[in-house]
Length: 287
Image (cartoon, rainbow, N blue to C red):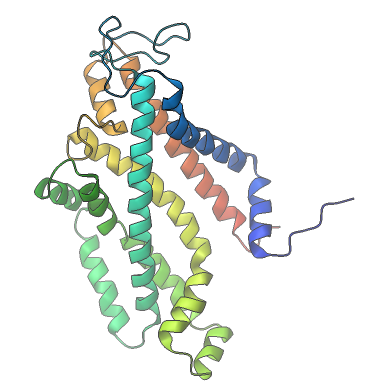
């Protein structure tokens, strides 16, 4: 007997998503990387700052004392890279959540309020857009106490909401003309309640797709700032500062660069592939 079709929109979207091989591979890769980041260090006897003087710059090997090798100080790359992935994911997820909350709220209000208020709100966004994004983040991280994850999180999230606000405002302007919004207005529902109960839930599709892309963007920005020495600082490990250390040993110990760079590439590829699959799954014209 054929499987019954899910009755809810979320169920149909999930079914269309899992029907795609690229989405399944992306989810599998993200799940595996997330599980390794959380549980992987527990499988190793080495700590992130443990120095093994007998194995300095040891290459990877399954029979070696260090599976993914060590750096010049004898620190285990397996443990340090997975700890770096955990920090990069934590910062990027929280920064993405902050930017989405600001962007969705600002964009929904700008699209729903009448008159020129919404226009002036978007002019403010345009002014911020004219400033180089990374330049602002670099200034904020340089002026505020360096090395704090909270400062890095706020710096990334506080200026990462601009594109979200534009997307949400455009969708809100289209939703304002829908009959259920007009009905809510006719019934005297307050504008704030309409935005929260009717507008924002109908924006979840495009917001979810862009949220996936935002997480990838935040991972890349966090790694870039840490590479420059403005993000996560030693002794904490981040993909960015591990890649910086590996770049200095590129000629003599290639694996010190390839291990964290490989995890970064895998994360970005999986997140972008998942966003592409989500966009197609959420398309109402999809079968």
